[in-house]
Amino acid sequence: MSGGFDKNQTIQDYTIILWALLPGFMAFYCHDRRGIRFFEQPAAEVIEFSTDYDDAVKRILADPEQAATFGQVDLGLAVAYIIPFTGDHSSVLGVFSILVQPDEAKTYDEIVDQVYPVVNSLQRELSLRYRLMAAYKQLNTRSAEENLLHQIEKVVYLRRTSDDTLTHILLLCRKFLKVAGT
Image (tube, rainbow, N blue to C red; front, side):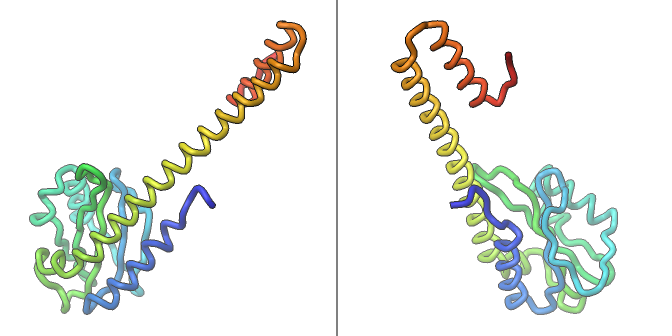
């Protein structure tokens, strides 16, 4: 089992569903909680993101309740709908931006209602995958710690002098902690 997952492939799968679901769908972007774009399924045409768009992303990240007010931004060649996504305990993890052709634009609430099942499923899947990765890392750490304890136990039973035993235990601990020493 791998400790990671292909986040881009997971999001790409949901993008395909959005393409089928939304008339005029052009592009899909994801921004993390700092506003940094970490996924993009760009439009065929080059879309210039305005300062209004950047401001809306920042406002919605700061307060997701403002999404209905600031979540729809006209970009000229497209209309962007910025939808917050949350993790456990409703903490804001970032935003999804769905770009639609201007002639297919609807109200923010209509788009959110239309894509809610897809966005909600993606939120759940990403949250579950991150929790699974965290559990996997924790399991690996515990396994390594248990292995260290077994090595120390062997050293204690095999060594004759306490100095030799202590030196070997310190060597094992430094190796485990990846600490250089003499």
